[in-house]
Image (cartoon, rainbow, N blue to C red):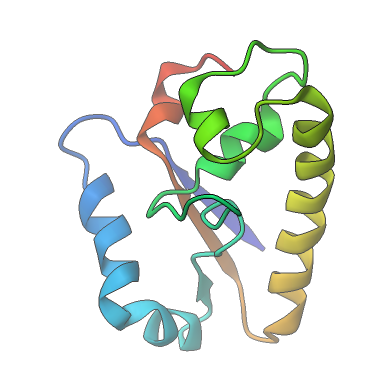
Length: 116
């Protein structure tokens, strides 16, 4: 299993990568054994093109909530702790449901800041 985490330095294709998933290519890519998971992109209050949830799953739970956390409904540290556990479980389930997945790709430009 290989994981590619695209942190999105300027002009490195982050927006194109995220848009290609939205443009109906997700199933084609999945058939080739590459998973661009929905986990980390869908929240109760909002859906994102990028995997912002990866950031939430890795950040310290006691970090002061920012606007993005609030938009995702994760301002409360206990909710972030629960989200983190669910994130990793769901990602594992998504990979396991597809027998041919050999690569998982996640993308979020904010990961470049390295503040997690």
